[in-house]
Length: 109
Image 1: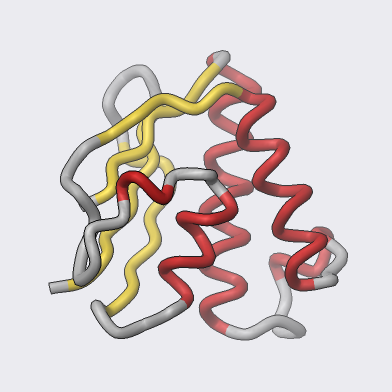
Image 2: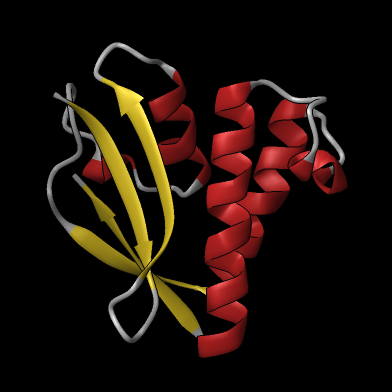
């Protein structure tokens, strides 16, 4: 059991992925940042998916910056922890797709 959270483009290709064990509290952080707590099912995601707009993902990125107090430009280097980097990379990859395609679908399994 665990949280496998995947982002998909309109072609159905996986463009973002985050994995957390069932006991890893950092999963809840990603759900919170995405304002997707209704997809949190305790030891895993609910198995459902939803579509996020560019604005929603931008809001998650801003919330990330406020929560962690990190400059987003540091995302691709070693100054942030593994789970922080995983969360940020997930949001950035979803944002890139949403900006290109208008939205991004995220599955919470």
